[in-house]
Image 1 (cartoon, one colour):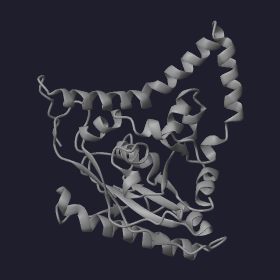
Image 2 (cartoon, helix red, strand yellow):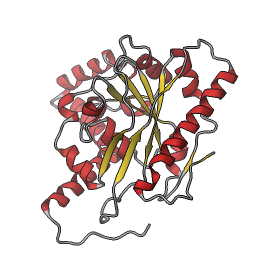
Image 3 (tube, one colour):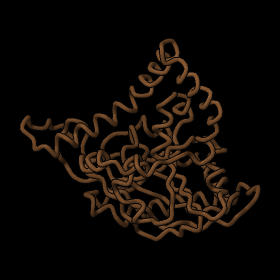
Length: 295
């Protein structure tokens, strides 16, 4: 996909959209380091008392990223995220209802470089997750190292991000009363490093741990597919980016599931994901002869 630079004369709304994306990229590339530096400087300066108190609070709060997080409706509802959404633009499409009395494991595909679509859909209300799936609380799982950065970790928690550790996932899926949606980019870092325009290859064949955990908790699994991103920072418009949430697979609760059960439901998940893609691909410009492949 050729890169086309945006013209110098743009309407204000496009400038705001670009700034929203740039601040988001900065947040993931440098804000954590900046927050850590500010904390260290505060400890060594005149603000050492509040910094010390905050450090003690961090020790007391260290398990929160593994215990469901601490999302903020205010942060998730910032107008900033609407500009972020409109830059690409990003849309969330519900193909089936999800019962808020149950817990769900949502597989996100493909990972992408910075998972911008997952962030917009599950860490903000810009695409209307709360209206489409009332009663469900989304939690996007990410690397636990991010939650070791002071101040920055609280910003991430406010958006609904939680640790990707196994104990974190199990905590969400075992919550009584349901209403929890744990979102995982199942392809992981290897898939993010292989991200390029038009790619339809997913790193899923060897990733079966999520099926085992879902079986152990009797959790419903739902796949979520993203069309190729519409544009990158500084590029001009070249289409929309859609995100489809598919019908859930109702997995039976199976303590200590045997390998054959894991294999069976893993195959069913791959088929469900392929069916979701085939059903909607033509509406987003994917040629009929292009299909998903798994490695």
